Amino acid sequence: MPLSQLSQDEALFRDSVYEFADGEIRPLVREMDEHAKIPPTLLPRLFDLGVMGIEVPETYGGAGATFFHSVLAVEALSRVDPSIGVLVDVQNTLVINALLRWGNEAQKSAYLPKLASGTIGAYALSEAGSGSDAFAMASRGTDQSGGFVLNGRKLWITNANEASLFIVFANVNPEAGYRGITSFLVERGFKGFTVGKKEDKLGIRASSTCELLLEDCHVPRENVLGEVGKGYKVAIETLNEGRIGIGAQMVGLAQGALDATIHYVKERKQFGKPIADFQAVQFQLARAATDVEAARLMVYNAARLRDAGQPFLKEAAMCKLFSSEVAERVSSLAVNLFGGYGFVKDYPVEKFYRDAKIGQIYEGTSNLQLQTIAKAIL
Ligand SMILES: Cc1cc2nc3c(=O)[nH]c(=O)nc-3n(C[C@H](O)[C@H](O)[C@H](O)COP(=O)(O)OP(=O)(O)OC[C@H]3O[C@@H](n4cnc5c(N)ncnc54)[C@H](O)[C@@H]3O)c2cc1C
Image (cartoon, rainbow, N blue to C red; front, top):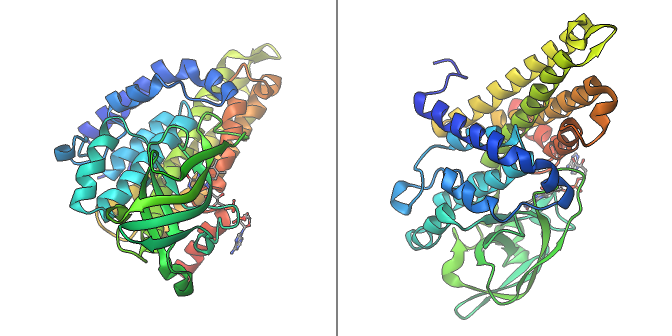
């Protein structure tokens, strides 16, 4: 089957998500960017749309669909607003994904129905001193009767403002190095847990990115996700998959910038004709469309490999690396082809340009993706 050919169900799903994004999210994009906030009324509508529990089995109240469906949803949303794209991405490809893979039956029964129906999740690995070197984290967990007491600070946590459930990583046995890292399911209401300062960002401004404070935060033993000391595995394996979602976010973003530019160059006249009539402009757009097509094929391939249970590590790293570069290139071209109008906020392309930058940073910077690819091929 051709890689980009969607089944009837996949096509219907993607179209319904894009229709929602186009009709319901597009009118809010500028305001959300300016106020750096997602209107709370939009969140329940995302749950109604069926994009917040895509892989959650129907028995737990989810859509029982595939990882590929998550990729389609993130792409379709990011074509309109990459901030909503990442909200849905973190929920599905990191939080729900980790629970499905590492959660025990009690944890799945307790949290999956909530995540599919109204609870937003966040994934808290990074800290001020540990980003690329995530396992150098300073957050600590102390084993006490009945559970663990967490202390530390997490930084850059997407969805933190809206989330009620956090997957938090802390080291419970620093002498064992990374083999002490453990992942915990932390509810917003747990004693000693606080969402701190929200970052004021260059792009994806509507997506909340906050600090988390763990001050003698009590987590019951039954909320250890996976085994004690195996948090490093939870982190590596979920991020390996999550970065395919970031690839999808970047493909959607590039497509959104290209859509807006194709529309604009047909309308804008200079020298007595639409600027789309100039071959130089046509060739630039043809190259951009080729870039987007190549990035999409790489993302779809990685996602389909993952769903087929085949190795996908190298393909996931490649698709994130390439898609984020394509997003930057295409959104930069979009600004150029809009001329002065590309530089102001009345048109959508300056925002796509700002939003593109994050693709090369989170869920492993481009250098870290190159490291993974090099390791796989050498
Ligand atoms: C908007 C936003 C949202 C985020 N959301 C989340 C989230 O939800 N959860 C979460 O846990 N984290 C999140 N992060 C954190 C993100 O994953 C980290 O910022 C990222 O991993 C990079 O870490 P760092 O910022 O510490 O940069 P550093 O690791 O300090 O890297 C700085 C530079 O050094 C380079 N570098 C580092 N090590 C090497 C090396 N070995 N070889 C070559 N070059 C290297 C990097 O490529 C980069 O260019 C988010 C960040 C942002 C900005």
